[in-house]
Image (cartoon, rainbow, N blue to C red; front, side, top):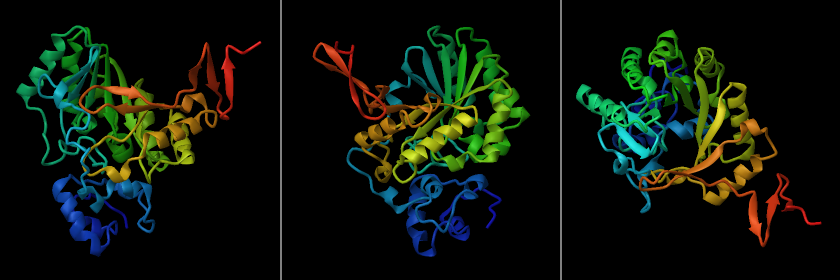
Length: 349
């Protein structure tokens, strides 16, 4: 079945063949709590005949989301603790997050801001709130980079994006603007000349961080949309989340990172899944994640290696948690090569 509009309800999921009739009531209960949206581009990637389809697992609601574990929290990375004004998160000295909206063209079932996004979420910044956010940035010369997140910032209209970028243009200490998005994958048709012009309207150095978690997401359309950005002089990096049942396999991860590089997107972050409510069925252990990242080393090019990162709960920022290749051993070090063999450094004798 070809899907022509975004799926938002349990009934629409059943009609599209993505959920069985017997599961409609449970899925509807999930949808009443957490936002649901599956774009036509994403729906077209799902294999309804595969109960373990990695695309469906990311976007189709599951009754497992109703199970909230004691360690899970509504704000797992502590945005609120580092938000001096609405729409701003200032966690690191030289950069801020700007959350202009809390809506997305699709909603990931593992979203760490799932309590904030969607029709029942925090909405779009008002003009007064946006003014306050821009004023905060302008008043702090230490802010070198502004990172648009949310919500998906590329869900804003080109007119709205252009207006914000022109306002940032008047702030000389802001040199870099970054956009975190799924749009080239989930709505590739949105990436046209108007959007590109809007991103460049501020005259800043622009980076787009594309979120994708499985190599099947990098379709010809997604790669073409990314090329439209890159060919316009916009650099791209990747971010992915390590998810059980989606990409917790070294061959899948390797294919994903290679696909990014083939698309001229530099692998950047591989996130350990956050403690968002109802997402326990997606989480791998840190040890499992480290083993997967270690297995990538030597197997694929250095261009394809992401940094394995953990957002420390409570608002304390990110920490690299990849396996250490070098550890102290008395007065020397033990270094492990990509085959798992240890070597002394400096070499003895």
